[in-house]
Amino acid sequence: MMEVATMWRCGVRMLGWILVASLMACSRAPAQGTEEGFVSLFNGQDLTGWDGDPRFWSVVDGAIRGQTREGALPTHNTFCIWRGGTVRNFILKVKFRIQNGNSGIQYRCREIGKWRVAGYQAEVENSPGKVGFLYDEAARGWLVNVGDFVLIDREGQKHGLGKVADREALIKAGYYKPQDWNEYTIVCRGNHILHYLNGFPTVELIDEDPKGRALEGLIALQIHTGPPMTVEFKDIRLKRLPDTFGEAKLLFNGRDLEGWTFSSDALRGTWSVRDGVLFNLGSPAGYIRTVEDYTNYVLRMQLRHLTPGNGGVLLRIVGPDKVWPRSIEAQGQRGNLGDIWNIDQFPMKTDPDRTSGRHTRKMHPSNERPLGEWNEYEIVLDGGNLELWVNGLLQNTATDCWETPGKIGLQSEGAQMEFRNLVLIPILRGKP
Image 1: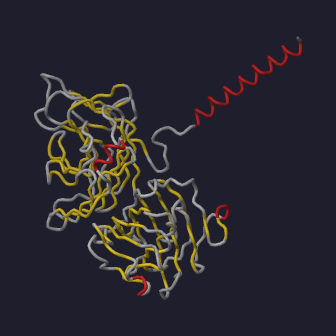
Image 2: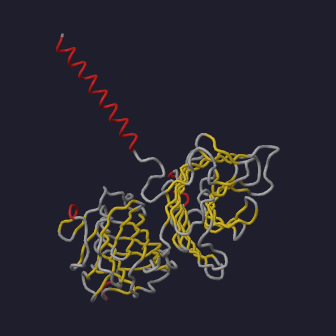
Image 3: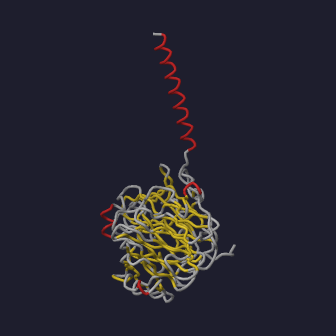
């Protein structure tokens, strides 16, 4: 009995230490707003740093609440404005919940009156298939529908370039949760804008209109005129990006291979354009590449495998065309998006713990979508630094990459693949 009692006391003591350790671990767990590079814009307690009509805006249960009632309705759209300064290039994350009515998240906007703003708006409302679109408040109006990729030219004319997602497929996938908490992610780099809702891409815009666009401005939250409504916002986080992005460039026009050439004549029957998408048969081995050289940039695209197999994106190609040219390969093999291959001893450094010979494995398990579905590949080459992002997750990095002008190539290496929405955003090195 003494042994049993002693063991019981030891067990209780051990359980106590485990509970203490768990509590200490919880106290060290990162809270919302502590993601790398992000700062919180809302303290969760009051409207410090925010400015809105007190008849409509308050803080309730840790969220900014916008609410109107019968007999106390605004006569025009009214806004709660963040007074922490203007934003230019950034990633903004906001959680929202709306019970009824219409609202929005304003960014890069300008003041046009007391608690009134004009400019870009991410739509907030309980309408799957509509929530997520891009509007220009008190200016150009509706800009980009959910699922669309649009370019606005220098004369202000809109051109549909393709799709970032199928609208009906988004609805079926439950990209929006009605009357529940949802999270917007808004990304602005120069004249290139992206909206994501709960991780799903909803719109993409290249805005070349010098009179209508905004490259810098305020952040605000909207209450729309109309019947009584309630909307809430919380976990508002901002990551500022460098002020070094040039004008976004469309690398593939959706019609033909203008701006591209083949690694050899044998590839001419391998690549084609169908329904605005770049299609590759996968054989023979080789690649298409840009005619122009590029050095520092954000390269974005969507790609999908129609069959299992290999492919890839070649970066900073130098020297003669051959299989394979000196370059960095962002792996495109099914299941291995995010891996790095060094081709022909291209000068660079990778993590030795993940590198075997020329191959550097990605940092996380594959987060690719099922065969036949579109994946988002974002490649950042900034001086000597390389980042590979797959569906919003940083999968690989390299340093001390040889900073040299080079072509960009898409490989034909076994898999039947499609590519769309190839956009290059230049990084202007040397700017402060």
